[in-house]
Amino acid sequence: MLKISGMKRIALLLFLILAAPLAAAQGWPARPVKILVPFAPGGTADTLGRLAAQKLSEQLKESFVVENRPGAGGTIASELVAKAAPDGYTLLVSGVASHAIAPALARGVPYDPVKDFTHIALFGGPPAVLVVNPDVPAGDLQEFIRLLKAQPGKYSYGSPGNGTHGQLVAELFKQLAGVSMQHVPYKGGAAAMADLIAGHVPAASNTLTSASSHIRSGRARALAVSSASRLPDYPNLPTYAELGYPQLVATIWFALSGPAGMPAEIVERLNAGVRRGLDAPDARQRLRPESIEPGKLSAREFTEFVAAEARRWAPVVRASGARND
Image (cartoon, rainbow, N blue to C red; front, side):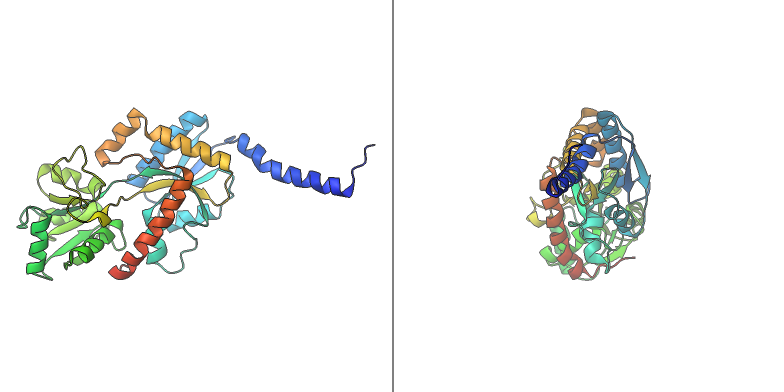
């Protein structure tokens, strides 16, 4: 019988330990993959998560199953994924709410938005838009700023809720423009738009997704959008950047993430699958009504983006006094 020395036995054991994850990665996916969406069905996070799941299922020949786990601004589902095994079978639709705003907004968020996750691929997301009721005597952003400065404290704005991206974009705009507006939080973007149309609030900072039909109908007047450049479907709507506020290039982004420590091979396959899937003509056609440009970042670039977003929004949250509802 061949005898193995103690040192060789240890070396063999180390080899088997190190080789096991590689073998598992090469055989992945061997069973259905679960994607947790931290918000209710029907929203942008859910739409993007299901579209990505469909495209990954088609490419990787295994089921990617979406499960909605809403609550606490996305932190409930995020914590579950952070604590899951990093084997590629439990993933998360992460986003600016759960990974940039919530850690600054609430004490005791049970995860680090960068260290406790493997950030895989950026889906993209809709920009924010500043809209006013047509009765407000301001035809463009500069006129609105002059109105706010002439009558400080008179005007308010609605948003989808306390600590939402809509509120933070508006608060940053207030800081940069040196104007005053009272924040009125709502339970979602649709409610904010309903009160704006009814004349209960003169302005709103909302996702373009929530505001688009009202802008097209003329029931809301759009003054500025937070996209990097003008949108093809809104050629007459200027960006904050071109109006002198480059700091307000921002989207309500969503993405695919997993637990920290996922095998690099799985991460690269997922990143490639998401980018290829969302760039397909049928996917672009589904995303265009929401003014979403698919993300093109590598996994490394996306991880750096998440860290930068967390640093970017933390001081805005603190300065705004935003809090959880």
